[in-house]
Image (tube, rainbow, N blue to C red):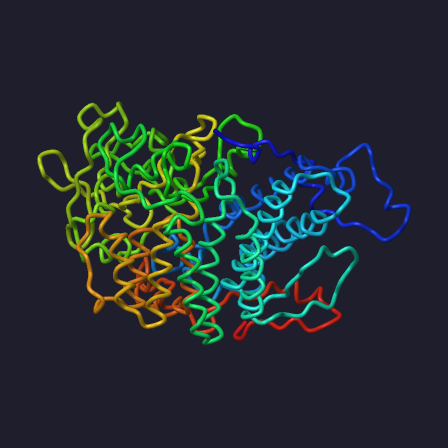
Length: 565
């Protein structure tokens, strides 16, 4: 089911990180290794370069293997699942030398933008013998990923340097473009991409609908940044291309489908069932998903770079013990969580108070019951873990209802988690905590929420409510009136629908809501007098700092740091 995304070689990736030189000798075409001159000569060569963009895009997720999902922790949805100050639990540690601020910057400029620029620099060469449809598709994908990356940068760092071409010689005089300029550049790339990308693609590839979906978001951001309300109409138009199927056969799924439909569950759980994330499985809602695969070249370079959702989002339930104080077996069919992305009470409980019958809150979509899995304890093996509050602590209870003195760590080891993350272990390695499950990146349900947001921002609350209700109706949740529509309600609905999938940090920065939402929903410390995101975040944390090493290396011009850092 996988395409050539899973066949890229390390040699091609190394090629795309290189630069050319004006020296005539170095411009000779090497024949013993990959180079732009000998690779980018036909459709297959360009497609190999495009595949490197998909590999890079996937690393946006797996790069968290060293930075613990900074796109989610320290937001209103999750906190760092430890009693120390990492993971933005203490925002005073968010500085220009933090690994995360550096790694994401490098990912954008050294992987994504340079690869996209290489393709765009060469694809319109009239001497190439490439069919026009193939050329358009290649160019459209490169434009999409360049736009995607600049949108990423704008919603993390604010204004950043726009690099339109490959850097072929040392450059030390970068200057920051404004955030509006970066967003405008992203929008322009996407506008062109929507004229080039095909309607139907193989699993994992970018269809036209994904470009319109992202363009809808960028127009909202640009409208907010420039105060130009006409951009909200453009956002509505872009989203409507997806919703009305003008950009391809995609839709919000309302009935059960696929092999999972024969098992207990609901239509929402079907969307995320392992093996059902892509369109070829009947899932018409997911427009784009990161692709992972076991025992397949390119499916994941290492086990550590596979889908790490279980590892980070699931609690460390192997540390739980029976009332007889026998530990659970480390990994089982649920994988191995380490309790990094520990949901806040807002994400676990508060956001569901509106409608407890919402199927997104069902046991098929949120796992709340856990079982003892160690056969060494015959009394409790395969029985559910029972708990009770005693003196403010959650303790394990015996089968007869008697409480024990075993206090549960509800930050790291025992909490409800979102079952979107569940999937088969990569290469059968359950110890890793990582899976080969494909990761939904863009869905039509979010397109409705983007259009609802655009309607809201232009003051059309009736249509905003209608779009939100399409999503809520599928979830069998109560419908809302226009009087309920606020920016906070839209953010809450995004949590109910998109948690785990959504890079929440970027959404909150995009809307200008990071600071106040973190203060409201993520202020409780995990230990007495300990730090918390909400207590340490400052107003200037609305954007991340520019990496200090980038500023220091830019000796030919002043690269401004974000205020406060």
